[in-house]
Every structure is written in C-alpha cells, then in structure tokens.
Image (cartoon, rainbow, N blue to C red; front, side, top):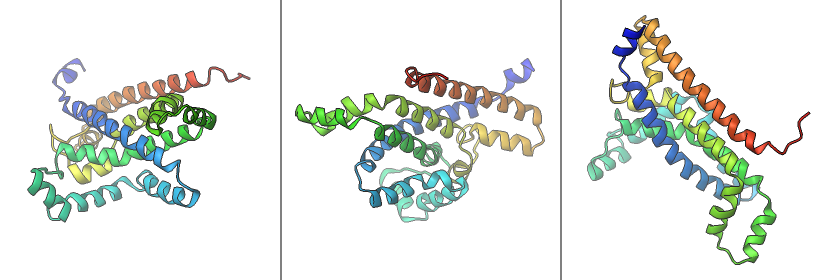
Length: 231
C-alpha cells in the first residue's frame, strides 16, 4: 500500500483543490452580490431571479455542461470572441474546470447568503441609516458580520461542491491528465479500467476531505446555536 501511495499521481488532488479554491472565491463575491440584490426585490421579481439562479442546482450537471460547451465553444460567438480578443480558450482547459465548477456551486453560495441576509434584524439596518452610513458600508459593516455564520456555511458548501464536480467539468474541460483531470474524473476513469484499488484510494481521499468539510460546517453553525436552549 505504501508503495502505491508513493507512486500515486497526485495531480487530480492538486487540480481539484485549485479548482475548488478558485471557484469558491468567484462564487463567494458573486453569490453575495446576487443575494444582496435579490433580497431587495419585490416578490414576483424575486421568484423569477431565484428560479434562474437556482437552476444549475436542480439541473443534471451534464445539462449545464452542455450549455456551457455551446456557449464557450470556439465555433460559437462568445468562444470565438474570447479566443480572438484575449487569446482565451475555455474548452478542455483548467479555466473550463473553474467555470464549470463555479456555475454548479454558485447556487449554494447564493442561497445560503440570501437566507442569512433575510434573517438579519432590519432594525440594525434602519439604525445605521439614521446615522448617515452609506448603503455600501451598511452592507459590509452591518449585514455581512451579522450574517457571517450563514455566509461561512455557504462558502464551505460551495468549496465542497466545487471539488466534487464531475458532469459539467467533463463536458466543458474534458479529462486531460495533469491538466483538467479532477479526483471525480480520476475515480470514474480507473473504475472503467477495472483498477478498484486505485479507485478506493481516491475515494478514501475524497471521503477524508468531505468529512473535514462537514465537521467545519458543524463547527460554524454550532457557534450560531450556542444561545439556543438545549432539550
């Protein structure tokens, strides 16, 4: 077993972690911004916006990957524009991994942030306005700190979803060893080859990571529940 671990190619782990971190950073800021905009909408607009932003969460990942492939293919307008103008190739690149993971994981960040924002005491916001504080400062100095546990939980869940993404990533970025091959893709590939021992090692690695994420979420949410009466 030690020999197998020494000779194991750890590039899928590195790629997955890099993808997860990059997708989480993007999802954090975009998700918070979107949640802040949606909570201020009236109910009809909120329902439509929420449906659109939550759609990647309920669609099969391969469907989302199909749309991303159509969008960023070099045979399509956006793909041609990105390549000709910025020399950016999305399909079958690590950037494609990040985009696919972000699209799939973003709804988790958005929904957790929105739920946290909706639980903020409106009296705190009204009090800050009476003091003449700008809306931007109120958002970052009052709302975000108050909603911090929910936002933190959303961030952790987003990272977990991003590192485990498979369907959309396979469609958009492919499975290129050392370049776009993530842990999920590696597991699928070695199982197809009948190498269950290597697959088991990668499953164990992702289980350890996932367990650490679940514990982190429990610790974050546990702080918020300290003052709740136990029964």
